[in-house]
Length: 297
Figure (spheres, rainbow, N blue to C red):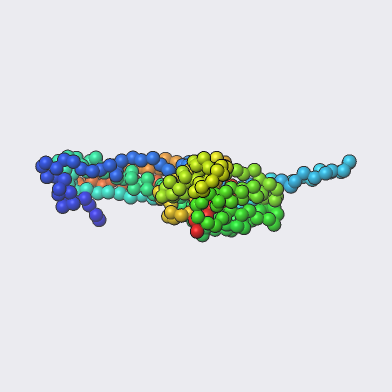
């Protein structure tokens, strides 16, 4: 069992040393709410369903009966809550001789830091797995053959190529081909470009150039109005996604009353201090249209 001991903070208790860098423990802005829906979970396993569509309207002859359709469930995603957490421990000596209260200042911040890291990782889980892990409809989030429930057609949410003006244009045009479960046109429009923060300058060059980026011409930049969204936690630094944000493609859930609970306890046998932080929750991707993604290659 690991403890923070005197030998690990020996320099911190020396007189005259009173300038310690702890800014890496400070709070920072959460990124994942830009592209992942946060849900207050009330069940051990939450269900996220999608609805099929009614049959299209048809011409009815005088005196003939209407064709009555029914509302059906399409593809259901189940997400079971799991416990995520970590802890920190101090010997009574390390706390007693901590002259500048470095440990007191840092301990809660560092616990929040590690739990925030896990939240951010879960917040991009759906995008990390977007090209490899099958969802409830049997294919990954970004795939060229998402099945429609009421007809034999498919939706294509996959594009290939790097993050360039021409590829962003091509991905935007794919949104005009999205269909509902009856195979009828679906009104989906990209309004977000999501990628790793490594690509921030590239994104700004593509979206904010008055003329078409990277060209020596007067061709105006006619890409749709896309808002950038970044994550430092995406595994890939080349993958990118266009999204219609009225559709939820990623969900992170926290069980009610058990989000980032922090507890401190003194061990009676040795007076050492133990702290833990944890939450009950999980994350998943949802098989819904309104997204086009590329591995960036």
